[in-house]
Image 1 (cartoon, helix red, strand yellow):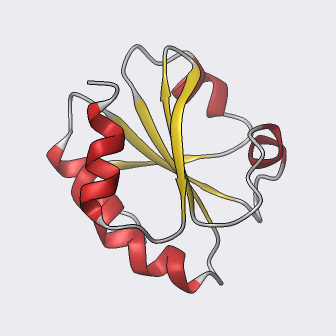
Image 2: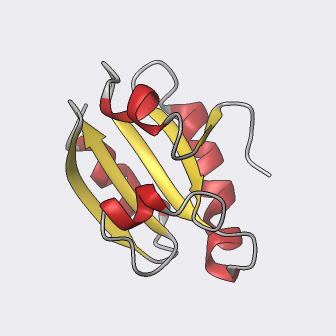
Length: 109
């Protein structure tokens, strides 16, 4: 499972934790049965630790919370979306290398 530095997000707390956040937020949309999601999980944990205090990192289980992924057009998982000031800055789909996620984060910090 995710490290303690990764927020557990759902339909109920997404607006408070992501949309209303004063910091950029990297959100990983995932599911327990998704092999690429499991493959990228250690990278998400590492980014949460490395960017602590600069970027919030959270995960939305698409099976448990379906409204939020639908709202942001998540069709494949993992989908990683970067939010800043409540708006989508950029997104990637798939188990991408850490360097690609760091490039994503650098757009917001």
